[in-house]
Image (tube, rainbow, N blue to C red; front, side, top):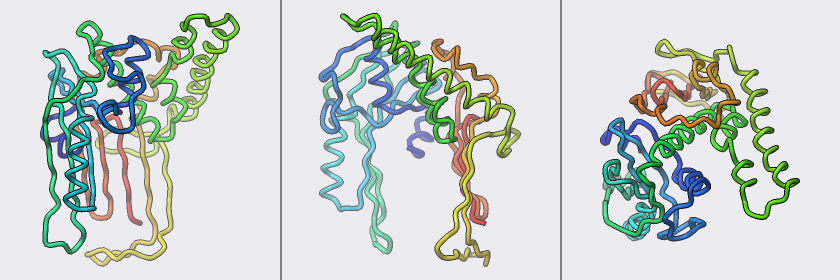
Length: 294
């Protein structure tokens, strides 16, 4: 995905299953199967990606170390899975099935990346007038993943699904008592998110490039020391992940149901860096993950 992000200038991405489920929960849709499968033509794609120009891309990823036969079979199945979501022609980007064949260490052959773009059945069609909601899903999926990775799981849940109970309460023949129970699901999620945000707001775990990040940090002892090329010896590893403190400080769970169709207008670069014994991955100035050998 890092290579695809760079080549196609992606700016946001979200989990394919989340995108399909949230869209169908609100609108229904043109679907080959109401419940997406784990394999085959009704499986959700791995990712829905978005470009600053407003185009949506559907990406299915595969990877193997088991040889050419397994790799060919995975690419064939990926070709079927990657068209499960269809967008209006003016916003439809690439529909790609990608496969990585990873050679074993010491092999004379190089690892290979395959990208194909065949046509297969559509499972979900997104209507033109509902594109703002599709943008909102992209923003929620992206931001919720960053929050969850940074230790704010309650906030991530409330942001990604702020209206689960409300949607369930609209089902036909739902009793008044059951409707109240469903609505309380949303209220409890909002309350849990508030309590969690109160812990993180105003706090900074680390700083990079002029941005402050808050989240979580863990230290691990290595079973054996690692000796680097410059002679440095490491016996511990520090892993930390954080969300920009400005995002956390501005969050209000009471507004999580508001549609954020314009939140993905900025171009967020996906960068990976290594300096000495520290490696990092950043999504623009929204999220940053670091691993450091100490």
